[in-house]
Image (tube, rainbow, N blue to C red; front, side, top):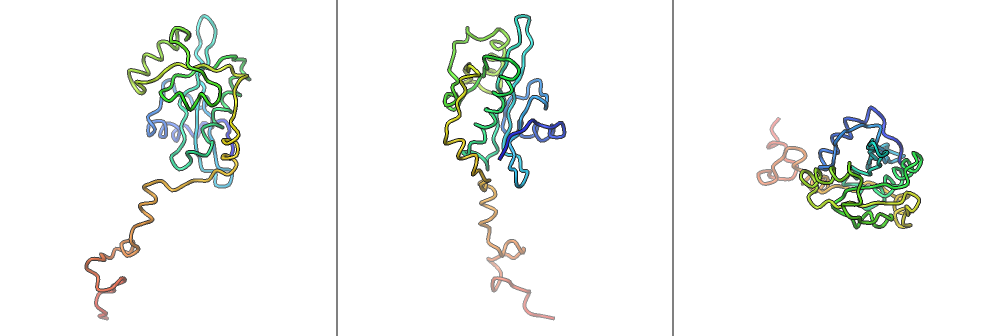
Length: 200
């Protein structure tokens, strides 16, 4: 597994996944994203974004739209997407990275801390209100000192061994009676692979 910057040709895929996972696509730009991929198959496993807000008081960096496909969850994919994004933020000179999320416990593992709404830059106060009214009613503000980011060892180890698991839908398809795969109704067939009475 590895994480790289998104390519322009991945814009449609990203938008499809963002919609499917009900994530924030406000002011979408594919170049803001990174994508996690399986190096053997090339299958995309997850993605995320840092959004830079330009303000009169200076630029503000927001971590947003982190998504992991169902068959890749629980294997450190999201953690490595976040790590790459925090590296990008640091490379661009940001000391603090903000995020507005409804599941804060996940990000606490990396050093993010909840903050009061009043501690947010004005541009993110407005974003928080919009996010609560639209896609994430329980969103709270969090912040991270970019130099304090920590990657738990278990995520590093899981990422090294990551492999796709079957989704519930795929598993259900695999459990279908093979007779049905051949268009044979097992309720009416006289034996498993009925050929129609043996007439020639």
